[in-house]
Length: 195
Image: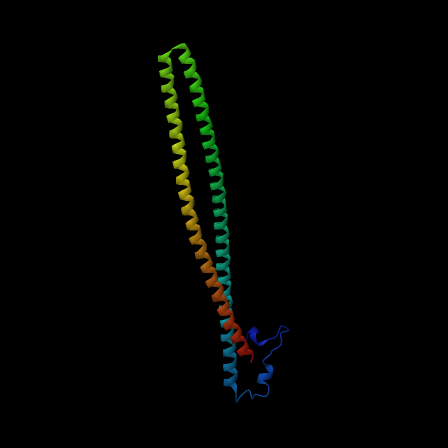
């Protein structure tokens, strides 16, 4: 029969030697064979347990890595969202300022034209100014629509991240519970074997 390390202490001595002391080698040969077969099976169980534990640990590590990566992505997206909101706020303020400046400029020009009674030129410049204002309003509307689309995308990404996080947490908790259950069985088996 194959001998294993389960029957030895850390010093290399057979810890089950006393169990077999005094047993007649010829009369109890079957008991010895059964004992070593049980010992071999116990070694196989320990090896399978170690493999399952290692696999569970690797899965847990992968889940933790995925969770960390997803949280970093979420934080990056949040920072990007804040940055874009600041840019939009700055653009809105700038557009409003430009609009105010343009309106003021148009008022001054209109006043000057009134004094000179150049109605044709005043009408032409008003049309140009209106076109420019309309263009600015279109740009502002386009920026608002783009920011709304980005906000919606960020919201969808946050929802997806939350789902991924919940899934990863569930997998990690299941792996931990499975590992703990295997450890309980292993300890129980080991205590029974030692007893």
